[in-house]
Image (cartoon, rainbow, N blue to C red; front, side, top):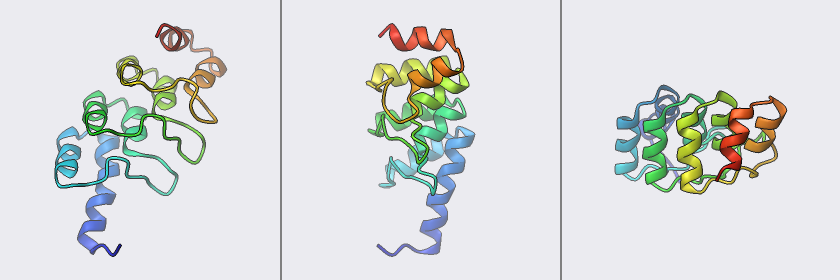
Length: 128
């Protein structure tokens, strides 16, 4: 697939939108057929980035578009693991409600909660 410079720049911008929580821009990208599971060079998806930076509205946009809940980055981290690490309660709840697996990935959300002794996150992960 050959993309133009403008198309490549648009896709690169999507990672910034996920980090910054620009749910409107992400929705616009998805509306024109942009890939919901776009991945950067480290394996981070838009969902992983939005979850790590605690942007609930962006996470909701990506979930509604069918983002892969349990896709792990190159370090074995998932969106749920990122949200647990950052203690983003609302995102953890949203991902769990959508069906995210607390045990997915080499560095699973459950492993993160246990390693960092995040008892509140462990409780959230086990209450489902």
